[in-house]
Image (cartoon, rainbow, N blue to C red):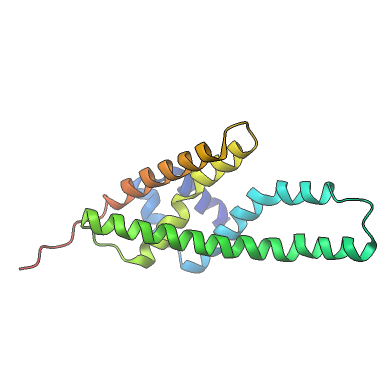
Length: 162
């Protein structure tokens, strides 16, 4: 049920209440949420890959192929999640510094993970339409930056140094 709570609050972002509820969640819950979300989003691709499996492959080749699909593909997705969220959180840190707000990288990492939910779902939906990949990426980044900006400005400004 925690996944659905996180999903619901992620969809409600950048509302203040949803943001503060998500910020109370631990980093482990955030990573588990991302893994489950990505599994759900990429499951159709995995199923399609298995369905299109060439029937002319030998049993050994088919076995190796399935190991790649079930072991290496999820590991690659986890790696890409961690690197992608970390890079986007770094960009959000730059935005935070420009806006002169009191936020740490750890807070931004979690905020980034949840703020990426709607843009990711939209990107996956657009992938199956004739929308060009470049436009889909532009929509993803525009929506993500908007959500992050709205979330960051909720936090108070840093106190001026005397």
